[in-house]
Image (cartoon, helix red, strand yellow):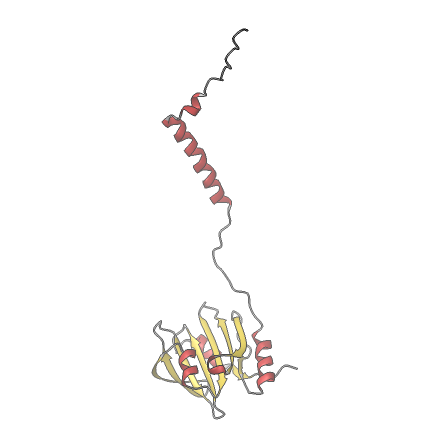
Length: 190
């Protein structure tokens, strides 16, 4: 028997030898691919919440509760309702609440409940401290300021309806005054 020839192995590529120059070239190609991916992936500059139909929520709330809830009618262009709901809230009280973004990008909200107690008011105003009063829209509002600097205007009507207007604007801001002056009783859903 003749000895079997040993299998010959292909010579190793000099690129697989792991030189520093080869490693640098590979790293450059990988970084170039990553930079290309970063360049083509779109980035969001601003996140906007879609507008909600706060008018239909308050109309439903008025129909269900039989209470005269307030709604800012005919706000000027640029106001966007971003949230609205009517549900049992603190102390299991049915609460109407909604929020708007103002034309200048600030936030204004309304919360209303009939027969609200101290616990409901404490939560609705985020444990805000009473800092004074202000007259707006034909009413005197108690001004409360929370730890973040947000203001809460509180009014109690003769029928025990508690209204809280919260805002990131100061109490003398025209947008806040516009919101309060346009508050009118909402009509119930048909």
